[in-house]
Image 1 (tube, rainbow, N blue to C red):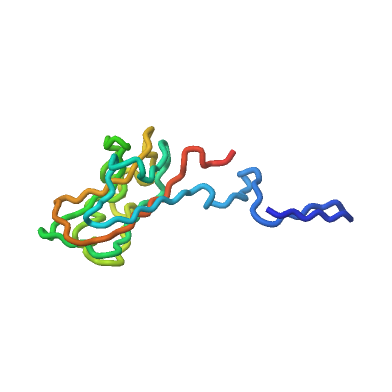
Image 2 (cartoon, helix red, strand yellow):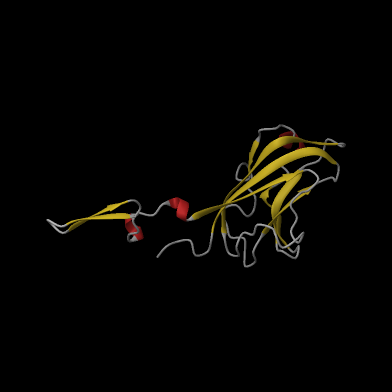
Length: 168
């Protein structure tokens, strides 16, 4: 933030975002909402406990939205393979394996077209959308209903608010 002080009247002008009492506004929503993204291929799906390098959504965070963009169409030998997208703790303990996108959101039909943007809040929303993930940090897990994927690449975008994100 830049300040300009006019010596004649001793008035200060503020340029840029200024924190104020929050009942009057004045805080950019981008300060409150964090975004995590994962890009993966059909043969290397995100899995908690794979290493200590995974992106983590902090404990007690609130999920604002979850979307999956199909970069390259997914194909499988059975043509009935759906995907579920959820969160697990780093040791593989389930938080909710389809809490972000269910098999209805990421059905074989919807993941078979490059460019599709699947939204976990449409229809029957994923169980974690609009609520807290609980007291453990969450790592992304993508699970196929049948382990027969042949091609595919996708990007998952999760917007969340950390527990201390609301300013006083």
